[in-house]
Length: 373
Image (tube, rainbow, N blue to C red; front, side, top):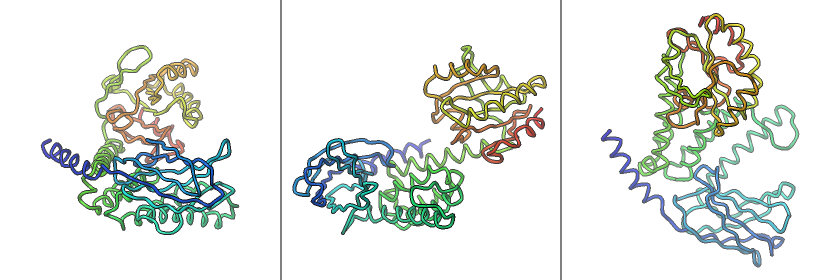
């Protein structure tokens, strides 16, 4: 415990040193954008949510912004628009200090802009990672004779792309933007079972970046991931849990399931694949409930009332529970990253089936129900 507290204090100090900084942007655009409006959207560290929005007018092809960043680099977007016209956009890395941006029109059809000329190291790294994605998509289209346009890469190609990105990121162990991209990469579905690769990459970064707020969070996430991965393996016994959100007001614990074979099915009312699998699960429950099979249908909705309505609508007669996703929730402790995910426990409370690890299509579900009875 002392070591954890000490590390946290050091990280807070280092994080504060890394964090604070003013920024300025001086940029120019082609003449066609004169009298347009330009907005700067500053995102969170991994580019998900907008934290700040600043808006200026473009005059004589020039614009400028000033502000403050709470970290050395932030993901950002420039949107150029006029009236109700569709926006032109540019994604880039915004650093503390002076940012000089020379912007050109890259693709008028999709209204994309691009940086031109000298770029910061953060944007050079971004350009290399974007280029890897473009090349992977192009290669896949050519191999499968697919026309132009966006394409969703299959899992194997996505995983290889993520590995290529990882190797590129590892070449910049002193750059904060590279660290943000490593964090983003660690959350990709194709990398969820490769936590060791992510943490090994983090260990190549400078001590300051490892001990930054973002670096510490990555380490904590890795520890949680490792513990969850261990807890969810076939052969492991279920840990103690208590879930309060049951429609009849009762509290469910794992002790209520002692000596009972059961399926723990993770779902949500908004999950289309969950609803597609629901009739199959209901049929299996009806078929084997007289032999002692229990089903614990675990919902992760934020909206409790929608879940209650869903239980009534589908006339679910098994055990239905609801728990918002949090660090201590059952879903997080078992490392459930996408749904539907089904676990089967035997009468001794041991995991004998984990659909994520052994049967994503759920084809073997009934076979393992029989083994649990």
